[in-house]
Each structure stands twice: as structure tokens, then as C-alpha cells.
Image (cartoon, rainbow, N blue to C red; front, side):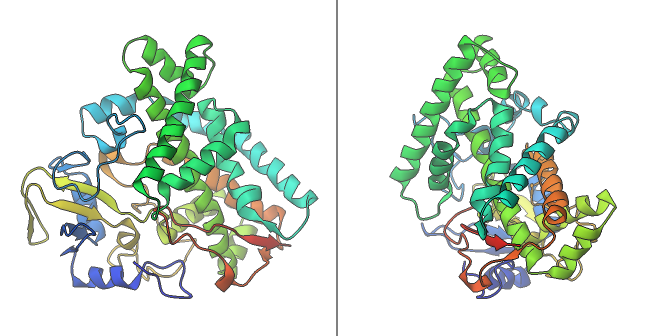
Amino acid sequence: MARTSGCPFDPPPATRAKQREGPLVRVRLWDGSTPWLVTRYAEQRALLADPRVSADVSRPGYPSPAPTTGGGSKTSFILMDDPEHARLRRMVTAPFAVRRVRAMRPAVQKIVDDLIDELLAGPKPVDLVEAFALPVPSLVICELLGVPYSDHDFFQDNSKIMIRRDAEPEERTAALGRLAAYLDELMGAKLAKPRDDLLSGLAGRVEAGELTRSEAAQMGVLLLIAGHETTANMIALGTLALLEHPDQLARLRDADDPRLVESAVEELLRYLNITHNGRRRVATEDVEIAGRTIKAGEGIILANDIANRDPDVFPDPDRLDLGRDARKHVAFGFGVHQCLGQSLARLELEIVYGTLYRRIPTLRLASDLARIPFKHDGSVYGVYELPVTW
């Protein structure tokens, strides 16, 4: 749905109108189906935690075409239900545990500082997306997974195709196939010579007979894409939002309390909501909620962007307030499918938001807001370019 011109940070007016209609409303999709759109925070949390609501994309009534991997095998664990979802998710949980992620802080801080050094030493204006926002999470996820950073152009180009809304199904399948083949080849190298990285851990699961090599490569594709595309967009779009709210930027830049940086991360996640497909589900049994009955086999779309602007939960929701307690937002989802990498994303954003504006205090846009190219054509929102200077 189209956004209002000049309001790039706010949800589309049409979705806000649906929210005013009620917590559950019918919507029509491209294929003529009419799933439920869940617009309110409380109902979204309740449904995301309800075992009668399925994430299994292969179930009849699921409100989206069923994706496959390049080889046509079963889709990733994020689109499965327990117990299979839990079994596969447990295999990659440990590297994303809070304690393990906190131990990465010095390494992530060095990545951020080194890239800022390069920014300051280079020409200006500069595209912050290319020079900073993409390299930060790309370097981090490559280090975590054990993927050579020299190949980052390859996986960025293909991941962009996969999340582009107007990409043809054949284009997506081809891009996914290329990534799967790349990860399969890398998995072979990890099997032959394991190292201390996540892909080597998956290779161990393959050797133990817990995963096939194809399944392990597929999980690597999911983590590689999810680990850099979303965070890169939050870095760039969050920076733009702060530049457009100079009072909040000054508040963040001048604060001595690290808790304000943590609060800023949560508020920007709530305010910006970069994933705009909504979380898709289907009911396996009749569910009574908010005076409505979602019948078994009916599709459900849980629109997190408007749930995080629910005035019953977040007073004055369209105002960016870095001091707000926004920790209960649903930007990372809720329930058993809550984002696996949320601790890592938070760490990266805390370091970026707590470092970039202090080290470059005069950072400013080098273009008019109206000329910034926003990603209206993909399922992950952000900007294609962000020209800045100082």
C-alpha cells in the first residue's frame, strides 16, 4: 500500500484506516483470497502465541504462494511448525544466545570504528548505505557464519532479488538457487576442514546425520540473508529518521547514559518497522478473538508496522521519542517464531547508533529528503542510497 508523499517513516494511510475499522478486518489479495488482517497489538501477540495458528507455508489457506529453495526442497524452518521448527532452530540457536552475542561487542565495535575511519579519510559526500550501512552487518554475519567477506557482492546482489517485491518468481528461484549452490559448496569445505564458525557447526550436524547437506546449506542461506539485509536497512533508515528529527539526534549524540542508546534502538525499531509483508499465518482450528471467529483454513496477516503504532499501547505513536519504553514492540515478532537474531541485531544497532553520530557530530544529508530513493518495491523497507556529508 502506498505511503503518503513526504511521510516516509509512517505506515500507509490505507493500513491505518483498516486499524480504525477494528482489530481484525478482511482484506483481498492478488489471488482473490480474503484473509484476516490483524491490526492491533494485543490481538497480534495473542495469535502469534496461539498453537492453533500455523506458520506452515504449505498448508491450504496460507496467505502467500508457497516458496521453495532452488532445488525445490522444503522451505526454511521459519515457515514450519513445531516440533520440526524447534528441532531445526535449536541447531543454530547457540551462536545467537545473549551471552555469546555480548562477547562479540569488541569485534563489532572495531568493525564500526574502522569503517568510520574510512569514511572520515575518504571523499564526501558519500553514500552511507554502500560505505557503512551494508558493510557493518555483512562483515559481522560473514564472521559469524564463516563466509569469506570477499564474496559479499555475490550474496548481496542475489539477496536483493529475493526480497524485491516486483521480482518474477523465476528470478527469485534462480537467485535462491545460486545462493544455495554457493552455500552447498562452502558446506563441503567446512565438512573437509571445519573451523570455529556457525557453518562448521552445521557441518557437524550433517556428519552426525541430523541434517542433510542440502538442509544445512539452506539454513545458511536463510541466516546469511536475514543477518545483513534487515540490519543494513535499519542502520540507514534509522540514521535518516534521526537526521530528520534533530532534537532526538542531539539527545542521543550527547547522552552519557548507555541506557538511552538501548532505548533509542527499541524506539527506532518500533517507529520504523522495516519488514512490511506482515507475518503470515493460517488457522488450523477455529479461533475466537476480538468478537470474531477465524475459521480453520483461513489466512491471517499480522501487520507489525501498524501494531507498533497502536495508540492503546504506545501513546502518541507517530512521535519518535527515544526516551520511550518501547521494548514491548513486535518488530521481531512474538512467540516461538520470534526473530532468532534479535540479540545480534540489537548489539549492532547499539554500537552503530552509539558511535556514528558521536564520531561525526556534524553528519547531515547531502540531498533533499524528496530525492532519497526509498525501497517501496521490496518486503524490507529502507533506502537504496543515503548521500551524507559533514
